Length: 179
Image (cartoon, rainbow, N blue to C red; front, top):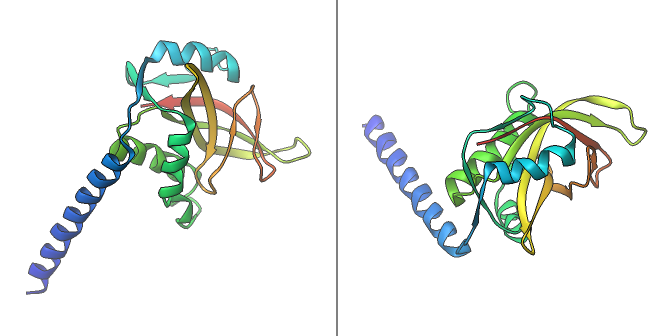
């Protein structure tokens, strides 16, 4: 009897998730523009200083890009920053991959990459390795890139190799993967 109740609960829960995903997707009425991976790579790689082979990976040939304002709605609705950080179990890489996967699954947006790199304190001292997101956006017909920290929703427009966020850390990507 308990197994039957569990099966019903699982099926009902998945039905709710699927219905919710469809409702949220239709509420945004997304109209992304398509860019080829090379168009994005040609602009991003020199901006962040990752021009050496193997420092960026592009799994798809085409990427769906929307303005940052749309991503702000998505990040505000998304509750990833409310999840609990746990070393080696659910830490920075899990947060970054989780946000990327949800953006793709729920909104059909594959223009959020996962970056691995270093973080620095306000004295410029390296704190350690870190994973975070880099989001490709369109602004007045131009591609721009946003560094997004999914653990706390901080973000900043990328203007060079290092990007400083409001909470004081400076981020430097060493490898970026879009998929």
